Image (tube, rainbow, N blue to C red):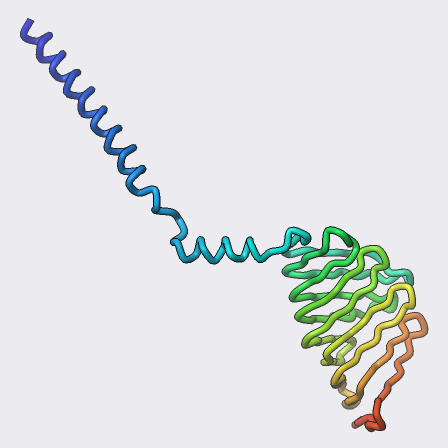
Length: 200
Protein backbone atom coordinates (compact mmCIF):
# COMPACT_ATOMS: atom_id res chain seq x y z
CA UNK A 1 0.00 0.00 0.00
CA UNK A 2 2.89 2.26 0.82
CA UNK A 3 4.36 1.55 -2.61
CA UNK A 4 1.10 2.53 -4.37
CA UNK A 5 1.05 5.84 -2.52
CA UNK A 6 4.62 6.56 -3.59
CA UNK A 7 3.80 5.77 -7.25
CA UNK A 8 0.69 7.95 -7.14
CA UNK A 9 2.68 10.76 -5.52
CA UNK A 10 5.34 10.50 -8.26
CA UNK A 11 2.67 10.52 -10.98
CA UNK A 12 0.96 13.59 -9.51
CA UNK A 13 4.34 15.35 -9.16
CA UNK A 14 5.21 14.60 -12.81
CA UNK A 15 1.79 15.80 -13.95
CA UNK A 16 2.16 19.05 -11.99
CA UNK A 17 5.69 19.55 -13.33
CA UNK A 18 4.49 18.99 -16.92
CA UNK A 19 1.60 21.43 -16.44
CA UNK A 20 3.93 24.09 -15.02
CA UNK A 21 6.36 23.64 -17.93
CA UNK A 22 3.54 24.01 -20.47
CA UNK A 23 2.21 27.14 -18.74
CA UNK A 24 5.67 28.75 -18.63
CA UNK A 25 6.36 27.85 -22.27
CA UNK A 26 3.17 29.43 -23.62
CA UNK A 27 3.22 32.43 -21.31
CA UNK A 28 6.88 33.04 -22.27
CA UNK A 29 5.90 33.02 -25.97
CA UNK A 30 3.14 35.55 -25.32
CA UNK A 31 5.49 37.82 -23.35
CA UNK A 32 8.08 37.64 -26.11
CA UNK A 33 5.67 38.12 -29.00
CA UNK A 34 7.73 41.15 -30.09
CA UNK A 35 10.79 38.97 -30.68
CA UNK A 36 11.30 38.06 -34.32
CA UNK A 37 14.04 36.61 -36.48
CA UNK A 38 14.49 40.11 -37.98
CA UNK A 39 14.82 43.13 -35.75
CA UNK A 40 12.23 45.93 -35.91
CA UNK A 41 14.38 48.25 -38.04
CA UNK A 42 14.91 45.58 -40.70
CA UNK A 43 11.21 44.72 -40.68
CA UNK A 44 10.36 48.40 -41.15
CA UNK A 45 12.75 48.74 -44.12
CA UNK A 46 11.29 45.65 -45.79
CA UNK A 47 7.74 46.94 -45.28
CA UNK A 48 8.72 50.32 -46.80
CA UNK A 49 10.31 48.62 -49.80
CA UNK A 50 7.23 46.48 -50.35
CA UNK A 51 5.00 49.55 -50.05
CA UNK A 52 7.14 51.45 -52.57
CA UNK A 53 7.20 48.52 -54.99
CA UNK A 54 4.61 49.07 -57.66
CA UNK A 55 1.86 46.50 -57.92
CA UNK A 56 2.10 46.99 -61.67
CA UNK A 57 5.47 45.24 -61.91
CA UNK A 58 6.70 41.66 -61.76
CA UNK A 59 10.25 41.28 -60.44
CA UNK A 60 12.54 38.37 -61.37
CA UNK A 61 16.05 37.39 -60.25
CA UNK A 62 18.83 35.62 -62.14
CA UNK A 63 16.92 35.32 -65.40
CA UNK A 64 18.21 33.94 -68.69
CA UNK A 65 16.85 34.19 -72.22
CA UNK A 66 18.30 32.27 -75.16
CA UNK A 67 17.41 31.71 -78.75
CA UNK A 68 18.29 32.41 -82.38
CA UNK A 69 18.15 35.78 -84.09
CA UNK A 70 16.74 36.22 -87.60
CA UNK A 71 20.23 35.71 -89.06
CA UNK A 72 20.50 32.29 -87.38
CA UNK A 73 23.03 33.40 -84.74
CA UNK A 74 22.57 32.03 -81.24
CA UNK A 75 22.40 34.37 -78.25
CA UNK A 76 22.16 34.07 -74.46
CA UNK A 77 20.98 37.04 -72.39
CA UNK A 78 21.35 37.03 -68.58
CA UNK A 79 20.35 39.50 -65.88
CA UNK A 80 20.73 39.45 -62.11
CA UNK A 81 17.48 41.37 -61.64
CA UNK A 82 14.67 42.19 -64.05
CA UNK A 83 11.15 43.57 -63.99
CA UNK A 84 8.37 44.18 -66.45
CA UNK A 85 5.17 46.17 -66.49
CA UNK A 86 2.17 43.89 -66.18
CA UNK A 87 0.39 45.94 -68.85
CA UNK A 88 3.28 45.40 -71.31
CA UNK A 89 4.71 41.92 -70.69
CA UNK A 90 6.97 41.89 -73.76
CA UNK A 91 9.36 44.61 -72.49
CA UNK A 92 11.74 43.49 -69.75
CA UNK A 93 13.91 46.01 -67.87
CA UNK A 94 17.13 44.50 -66.58
CA UNK A 95 19.97 45.24 -64.18
CA UNK A 96 23.52 43.84 -64.32
CA UNK A 97 23.24 42.43 -67.80
CA UNK A 98 25.43 39.94 -69.69
CA UNK A 99 24.82 39.00 -73.33
CA UNK A 100 26.67 36.48 -75.49
CA UNK A 101 26.24 36.32 -79.27
CA UNK A 102 27.57 33.21 -81.04
CA UNK A 103 28.06 33.98 -84.73
CA UNK A 104 28.18 31.48 -87.57
CA UNK A 105 31.88 32.18 -88.20
CA UNK A 106 32.57 30.79 -84.67
CA UNK A 107 33.33 34.24 -83.19
CA UNK A 108 31.69 35.36 -79.94
CA UNK A 109 30.58 38.85 -78.91
CA UNK A 110 30.12 39.42 -75.16
CA UNK A 111 28.41 42.55 -73.84
CA UNK A 112 28.18 43.62 -70.20
CA UNK A 113 26.18 46.60 -68.90
CA UNK A 114 24.64 47.87 -65.70
CA UNK A 115 21.19 48.18 -67.28
CA UNK A 116 19.30 46.90 -70.29
CA UNK A 117 15.96 46.45 -72.00
CA UNK A 118 14.85 43.27 -73.77
CA UNK A 119 11.81 42.88 -76.00
CA UNK A 120 10.87 39.21 -75.79
CA UNK A 121 8.69 39.47 -78.91
CA UNK A 122 10.96 41.30 -81.38
CA UNK A 123 14.16 40.03 -79.61
CA UNK A 124 15.58 43.58 -79.78
CA UNK A 125 17.97 44.55 -76.97
CA UNK A 126 19.22 47.84 -75.57
CA UNK A 127 22.24 47.99 -73.26
CA UNK A 128 23.17 51.15 -71.38
CA UNK A 129 25.24 52.49 -68.50
CA UNK A 130 28.91 51.47 -68.49
CA UNK A 131 29.01 49.06 -71.39
CA UNK A 132 31.95 46.73 -71.89
CA UNK A 133 32.11 44.49 -74.95
CA UNK A 134 34.63 41.88 -76.08
CA UNK A 135 34.94 40.50 -79.59
CA UNK A 136 37.76 38.57 -81.29
CA UNK A 137 40.56 40.10 -79.17
CA UNK A 138 39.02 43.61 -79.18
CA UNK A 139 37.67 45.46 -76.16
CA UNK A 140 35.04 48.17 -76.43
CA UNK A 141 33.56 50.61 -73.92
CA UNK A 142 30.55 52.90 -74.47
CA UNK A 143 27.41 54.28 -72.85
CA UNK A 144 24.76 52.66 -75.04
CA UNK A 145 24.34 49.74 -77.45
CA UNK A 146 21.21 48.85 -79.42
CA UNK A 147 20.80 45.46 -81.05
CA UNK A 148 18.08 45.22 -83.70
CA UNK A 149 17.10 41.66 -84.46
CA UNK A 150 14.84 42.61 -87.38
CA UNK A 151 17.45 44.97 -88.86
CA UNK A 152 20.41 42.69 -88.20
CA UNK A 153 22.64 45.40 -86.78
CA UNK A 154 24.24 46.68 -83.57
CA UNK A 155 24.70 50.41 -82.93
CA UNK A 156 27.15 51.42 -80.19
CA UNK A 157 27.18 55.06 -79.07
CA UNK A 158 28.30 57.46 -76.35
CA UNK A 159 32.04 57.90 -75.73
CA UNK A 160 32.92 54.86 -77.80
CA UNK A 161 36.43 53.55 -77.24
CA UNK A 162 37.67 50.51 -79.17
CA UNK A 163 40.99 48.92 -78.26
CA UNK A 164 42.49 46.24 -80.47
CA UNK A 165 45.91 44.73 -81.11
CA UNK A 166 45.82 46.54 -84.47
CA UNK A 167 45.03 49.94 -82.95
CA UNK A 168 42.61 52.14 -81.05
CA UNK A 169 39.53 54.10 -82.14
CA UNK A 170 37.57 56.81 -80.30
CA UNK A 171 34.28 57.87 -81.93
CA UNK A 172 30.70 58.89 -81.24
CA UNK A 173 29.05 55.89 -82.88
CA UNK A 174 29.86 52.50 -84.36
CA UNK A 175 27.40 50.74 -86.64
CA UNK A 176 27.93 46.97 -87.01
CA UNK A 177 25.97 45.39 -89.84
CA UNK A 178 25.76 41.78 -88.68
CA UNK A 179 24.39 40.48 -91.98
CA UNK A 180 27.06 42.15 -94.14
CA UNK A 181 29.72 42.01 -91.39
CA UNK A 182 30.72 45.64 -91.98
CA UNK A 183 31.58 48.45 -89.55
CA UNK A 184 30.79 52.16 -90.03
CA UNK A 185 32.37 54.73 -87.72
CA UNK A 186 30.69 58.12 -87.15
CA UNK A 187 31.47 61.38 -85.38
CA UNK A 188 28.96 64.17 -84.71
CA UNK A 189 29.11 67.96 -84.38
CA UNK A 190 32.25 68.17 -86.52
CA UNK A 191 34.21 66.08 -84.02
CA UNK A 192 37.05 64.09 -85.46
CA UNK A 193 37.42 60.35 -85.22
CA UNK A 194 40.56 59.53 -83.30
CA UNK A 195 42.27 56.44 -84.63
CA UNK A 196 45.66 54.87 -84.03
CA UNK A 197 46.03 51.94 -86.42
CA UNK A 198 48.95 49.53 -86.66
CA UNK A 199 49.21 48.57 -90.33
CA UNK A 200 51.87 45.89 -89.79
